[in-house]
Length: 195
Image 1 (cartoon, rainbow, N blue to C red):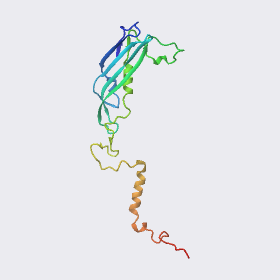
Image 2 (cartoon, helix red, strand yellow):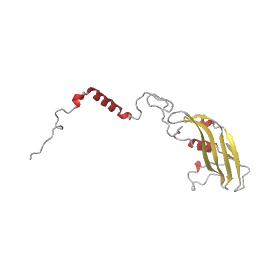
Image 3 (cartoon, rainbow, N blue to C red):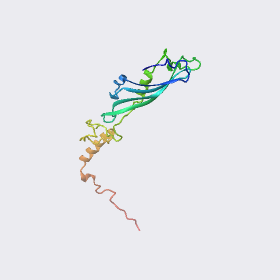
Image 4 (cartoon, rainbow, N blue to C red):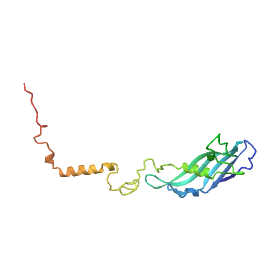
């Protein structure tokens, strides 16, 4: 989104407000995003700081994400704030060696496209869940555990210990009850003290 700042040129402290809607096509290819359900809504304020132009404001976008546990669609609204100063000219190298990271004014316009896109991308949650107690998917058959039950073994068993549980089951099946008793063992003997 490009903003025309010709009304602020040469007027330090002057500002204007902008409210715009525009498409969020850049979000369509992301694996976390199931569907973009509306345009980006931007409410911005642009202020002449003397050395440049400060852009502040709020962004919102309605999306359909996927639950990270059960993969079902989840409608949500991304909301984020932005604050960035666009300088009239790059600072002297001695003052700031990282000046190339600072956006610059292009004629009488500010190109806020990358600022808006980066802010929205960063605001996507790392893990989205449809409910706090979402049980997710069965690791065995892939069933959505919130909607159905399955006959798979208990998923709470640590998969690394599964071979040991099979071994224990085999031992219990091959051992007869008589062999497990301690017939004639020293544990059953009692000793009387000599008096």
